[in-house]
Amino acid sequence: MEFIEIFEMKMPVIGLGTWNLRGKECFEATISALEIGYRHIDTAEMYENESEIGEAIAQSLVPRNEIFLTTKVWSTHLQYQDVILSLENSLKKLKTDYVDLLLIHWPNPNISLSETFKAMNYLKNKEMLRFIGLSNFNKDLLMKAQKISFLPIMNVQVEYHPFLDQKSILSYCQKNNISLTAYCPIARGRDLNNPTLEKIASKYEKTVPQIMLRWLIQQKKVVAIPKAKSAEHQKLNFDIFDFQLSSDDMYTIFQLNRGQRLVKG
Figure 1 (tube, rainbow, N blue to C red):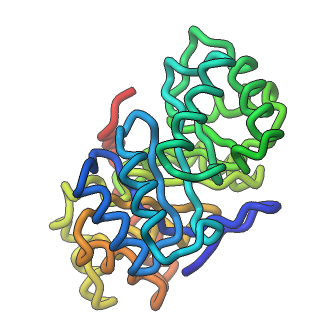
Figure 2 (tube, rainbow, N blue to C red):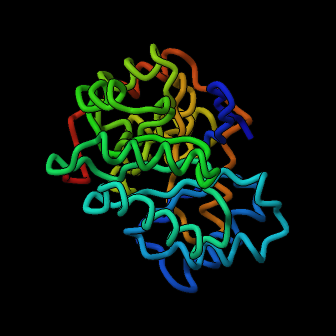
């Protein structure tokens, strides 16, 4: 496993994405991921699966302090008291006293960020969270948030894969010691027969998803959270630490950008 270290934050570069995983399927996926070696789990109150993830972590043999756990506050819960209540509820479901990273899930122009960050500061002082970040914020909103926040913004989570350029916000994050988490990192599997990626995959004797994930984590300060419910796919997504893409192949994959955004805000 490889990590990104920013100040005291040590974040595994591959995590389990859990959007749209619920019930028994989510519980079993979390259990198998932890058995395989995943130590980074990403969820959100909106996903309605925190209870299953909490139960899986509780039943696993992995100590809580070895797991990097991220959850997110939904965009309508960003008022001061709502943020506090949201995390309190999440912690009960997750069966833990704290999360490693709490993100604002989506920006809400109708609620002042100062309200949200004031609550996050309170929660940090109560040791209910370790670090804070943002999800689905662009560079301008990130910069605005940095001016308002009491705490350093340690992470930004955005859709990022070879078919969607995120150069603007990624470059800013890299220059300002902020990690970037890529969700939909294999573009929801829609282009696994891309001839360019197939050719590169053949060269390294890897799968196309493995090439896409390796391309992401080889970039400075980038983390990827592929969703995978089967142990087989989880193992494949995790088996990317035994090779490196050449600079030429990295460049070739960068050229695949076509502005293909899968998640609309």
